Length: 83
Image (cartoon, rainbow, N blue to C red; front, top):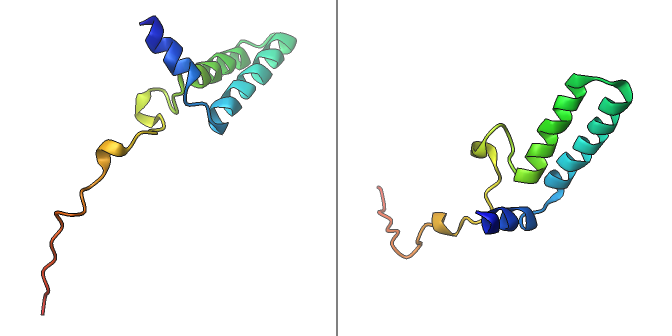
């Protein structure tokens, strides 16, 4: 479990993941300065998305990097001429 979390945190960093963490920090600073709980919840939401690399509220919108299992073999395709 620990190695899984360590691997998930250390790989897959891209622009959107860093941007979510930047938004989380900005919202956290604003929440503390304005003492606003709603902005604090937004900060926690963006922090969760940045750390876990999720797109929406679950893994269904997470970016998929390894698509090698989805490749269609091109040698088995046959075409039939239609007249």
